[in-house]
Image (cartoon, rainbow, N blue to C red; front, top):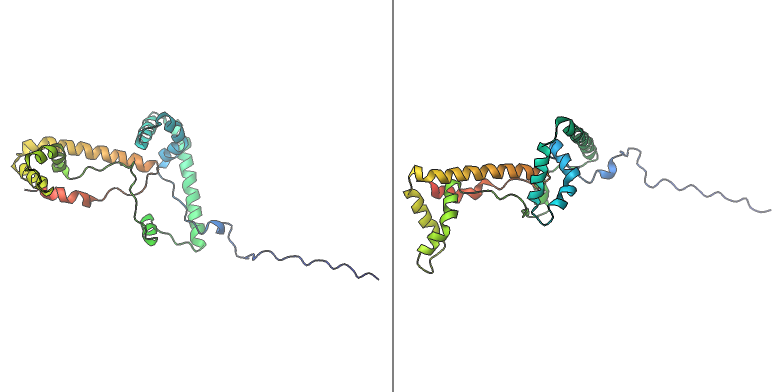
Length: 220
């Protein structure tokens, strides 16, 4: 008599964990927080369209156009983007909870870079911060003149010393135009940085320490 066919044993599910969380698959990656509010959502949706109009120009030009277009939108037109941002924020909150529940360790961007031993790279398209206050403006406008007034072969520090001396000789009235120019440059930088961050531009503003060497020279 023919032996009865043996039924193949069903293969056990591959290391199925009874306590597996539906979001465990993403537990290794920290969720990315949505930025820029409703304007950020607007930028994400329309950036490609405006990028074509600004082809060959700096990324900041795209942001300027997006910002100008956003200001023309009515509250009713902005409402869908506000909803998209709220939905994205709610999803981020839920994903972050799942990330933490899966054993993920929340790290700031700087901490991540430091942990990997990476040096933070500056974005060449990021707005450039004016430094040195009113004295910095004075220095930039007169650097070439001061350089030419020094003997050939003079050290680079000679320009700074001469500029510092000339600055101290100026009256408050003479310094006022440079102070005004610096305030305008600082305001323009702040606005550009807000727009840059709104479109997801990377990271923090340039450190205030960059301003210290010039600022000290400006003191009487």
